[in-house]
Length: 503
Image (cartoon, rainbow, N blue to C red; front, side):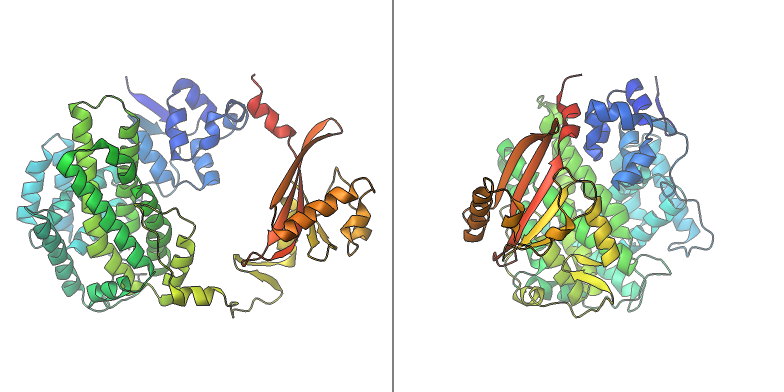
């Protein structure tokens, strides 16, 4: 019996009908769905599309996951999940060629073997270039072809990168890209979009190679990660050692960096949509399949077949990154882009044992104050806001906040109702004057420990007016670790009880 999901129904209603949705949605990022109190309250007013918008989870990813798990969708599909054909949009390939590509999808849909379709594809499209395939994929999606179907075309497309040996595979990939860039020449629009900025793709591989030689440059680190992953995959091919799989699964970190730092920048700033539309989906599928296989205990023939298939896709992705994605980035990204990527990449865990080296030029610039002027705004390393915005933000945080500077002077209290009263007259006074004599020695000791570096935080749990409170004292330090003050955060923790008390 078909499993049907009406997207107009609430999450609570759908999970009552299909309990397996809890695990599916949780895996996509709807983590609170596993908490019964949240499901029984917010879940009764929240639909899947609304929840995806709140959590900033791409709805196309949600739809694909539901389809992959055998659900049929109805109701109001969110805008952007599929796209109607747009006659005014420039077409990257001829109608005849697009129809040929669609025919391959129909043949796959009717159950024909992939290798049979792939053989015809290679024969009939042997002169095709990589950019033309990417444009065709985007054209199909603009016409409303489901992403899952376009992904099948991507698998056929990978035939261009096959060969009897590793060297042949790389050579085929390079040949396809070279042909693509020769046809496009300088100023061609890679993704076929009229809004795409024009770029000169001549010498793109040399540009990428030059960046990879810069110590600590993001492309150097990403390339080293690919080399380490390639070695792991080769080793697994040789001896089939399953103990290598946890290390291989670290590709999720590598893929996360690509998605957050490369795909998005290419799409938003430079109008190159192909990588984010197709490669990002492949990344997710590889990562998810490896995760699913890791949870299964039955390592039979089917499991091994799936494992070999997904590792093959991971290997192909390495070729596509090195020969297509990275050169595209090298041509488009400015030096400022790369420095921003370098700084943001520090927030990600190391993978495959590769730790990026220091890029001296980017580091020296990090220490400088940005020259950009924002009149009437508070400028910080993480962004800029008006005083009104900053005040409202601090008042919105569900805590009582106090800041005491390095000279032990009260400098700031956020506004709003407070369990521990803080009169405005206390601002600019010494913090010790605000505490009774019996408490003052403890406060002095805490601040002295922070100043000397003996401690960084002191959490104090207490009950106040019948409610559980957490008072957290924390040392505030600058980038160099110098003590600049003490912060006190008071939080009412009563809300947490409903998540831990058995109903």
